[in-house]
Amino acid sequence: LRCMPPPNTLHRPSQSGASRGYSYAMFRMCLGEDSEHLCPPEQVAIEKLISTRWRLLMDGDRVNTKSEDGSNACAAYLEAVDVAADTLRLDKAPRTYRENFTINYRALFPDQARNYRVDVLEAGFEQYATIWVNGDKFEFSAEAMKRAEALQRAWWELGAVLERWSQASRQPQWSQRPARSELRTALVALDFAWASFEHKYIAELIDIEEKARRLIVHAIEHERMVAKLEEEIHQPEGDGGEALMQSPTYAEAQKKLVGSIGHLNSVANTRRKGRDDLSREVLFDAMATLRRCDIAEHSGESTERLIAARILATDVVESFQAMRDYLREVEHCLERVDPHLCNNSGLVARLADWEESWEMGIRYMQHEKLLNAVCDLVAEIRRAQRVAPALTAMCEECDVELFLVLPRMIWLRFLAEPQQHAELLRSLLPHRFPKSPEAKAQWDAEVEAFLEKYRATQRLLIGRAKAADKEQEAWEALVQRVVSGDRS
Image (cartoon, rainbow, N blue to C red; front, side, top):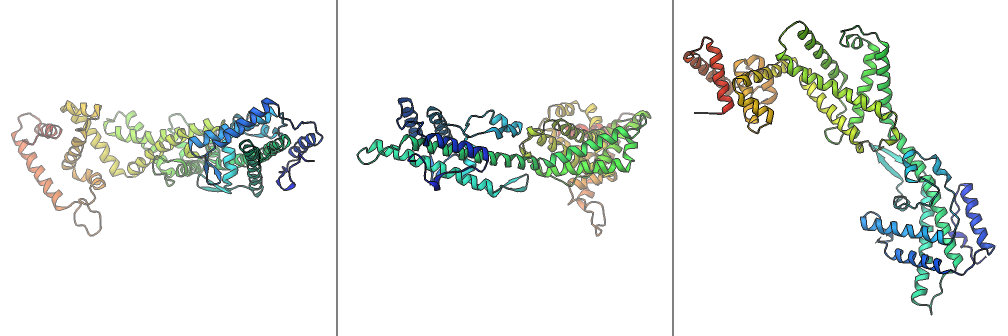
């Protein structure tokens, strides 16, 4: 029985299959089937194992696996452990449990080979009882922690055997090399402890990941319900979605979908604010705006003033549809979705676009005066481009000078139509456009003085105009000055 390890160092996995395999490996050695003599290839494998062990980087009493050099050194040592076990013809611990892993983990553990991975060893030594995913706390079981401790013991026991070998090589007169059976016992114990921990740790990780994906699963379920109602509710041709928007059932389903997207956004959107307060009303108002644009277009009205409104509303609707398309796509490959949702670049990109578009929707779709002012301003800029071609070039090329011209264009439009554009200027210069009950005027004295100066200038330009449409000529002169920035 000399080859048996001491009772307190023998790790006995809880799985019956692993226990039987471990007992069988020990039984073979006890029967003397394995000679104590190391053949030359076995000696070479053990010497290489010891050599790679010396290259391990340590942080106190722990193996350094965090740095690149430390991780590479550890990977080399684990490979040497595997090679030594194969060279000594040791039985492997059963690893049939890997067949039940998800597709992601089966890619990491494709067969029954030992496949010692640095990240599994790191998890065994770190022994994190809890992890946080998407803002939620998850705990590993006491059994997982127990198996991690068993793995640590087996790791250090193998290290102690290899250290005795090294000492015997350096000082043969004082030390004796461990017997072959001791090396085999230590390697087998490590393998069975490793498989036991790997099984429990990965199984619990899979469970945690499934729970962490629930946010996106809920969003998928809500999207599926919205799609089902869209098929069931009759929509007359040319209705523009009016029948759907009037359905209380559809409104509730859509509200839940928007809420689930908002929850996803608060967890995964690392590019922007991660807002979860963007309501379904933004989408409702955007669709209503699009219907108004369509009605105006079909009735033959000029749509130039509606261009900005259509663009803003379309962005709201399309960003929402892009999120729905994404949910439909990942529904069939959920295992490929990183449980840390912020690591999914496709999801984050769509959420960032959704949040930005809906913030603009809140700002303009839900404030009619502001939306009308923006629409009028955009129409005025397009009109100004026909008078000053340089402005067209600035817009097409995003010229730096454009950002000097735009504020002047905003002021020019306000000065021409102060009541219509007061709300827009208030959003940009709140200190100049007070809205408190105590305020006696819509804007302060300096703005009023500016208005008086504009009116005087306009009267002067109209008085000097030679064209039939004197106001048009005066306006063109002001636009030319605004675009060129000429103060002479």
